[in-house]
Amino acid sequence: MSDAPVALVTGSTSGIGLAVAEALAAAGYRVLLNGLGSAEQIEAARARARAHGMEVDFREADLMQPAEVEALVRYCEQRFGRIDVLVNNAGIQHTARVESFPVEQWDRVIALNLSACFHAIRAALPGMQARGSGRIINIASVHGLVASEEKSAYVAAKHGLVGLTKVTALENAESGITCNAICPGWVLTPLVQKQIDARAERECCDKAAAERQLLREKEPTLRFTRPEDIGAAAVFLCSPAGDNVTGTTLAMDGGWTAR
Ligand code: NAD
View 1 (tube, rainbow, N blue to C red):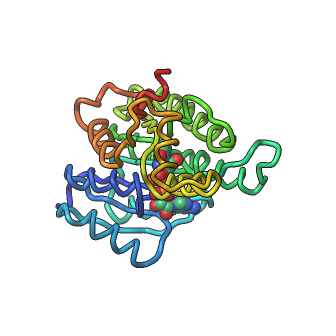
View 2: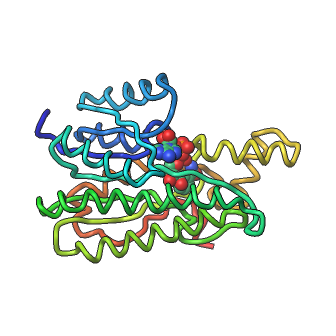
């Protein structure tokens, strides 16, 4: 359907981004996927999103480069005519104590998890403002609300992203554009699997035991949030019921921040 609304989802070749892209395609959006990965991984992501019968395209862009963020937004506008929904999802993690945190890793995490979101919002807003409607969803984290040790860059970036969400919401409050942040706790994706594997190696335990430890430390429900749950939350924020939901954070964290 060439007049269907359009969603741009960054970092949608895997994990949460792919689940959000699939949920939006199932809800009737044409989707532009983006991310890194092998040709097979990109084709598999494209096939999963296309299974819902909507038009799906993919555009590679290294979002650590501001010019590539802007080019991605422009490509989406040219390819599909507009952007109704922007989901800033691409993100990375690096763990180390502050005094030994590699400077280049700090710069990478801030560039992708915070600055790329600013560049995408900055580039997409004029089109949304001209049409008087739009939805911006930032996939922040529970780490946009509280901190954990050894995650200085990630926690700083995600707190910054929550702040950027609020400012964007306020500046566009009367323009039909909403901006919100979803703040997941643990979601079992490649990003978290790396942390489980590292823990299993460090503690000399098996991966199942490392998973249980990870959950017990932080999530009272002792469950992972599923990627498709984040997709459903994004669909809600894009629905008419989300018209007056703006500048807020939706924690999907199994009670992590209730403690
Ligand atoms: P993931 O590693 O499965 O996916 C990350 C995506 O970002 C991939 O598509 C990857 O190709 C893309 N990406 C990485 N570097 C990129 C770059 N330079 N340019 C463009 N794309 C790039 O991770 P995930 O767990 O699905 O995380 C997605 C988002 O959710 C991140 O922002 C993450 O911080 C956030 N988050 C995840 C969890 C969790 O438990 N998994 C919890 C809270 C928040």
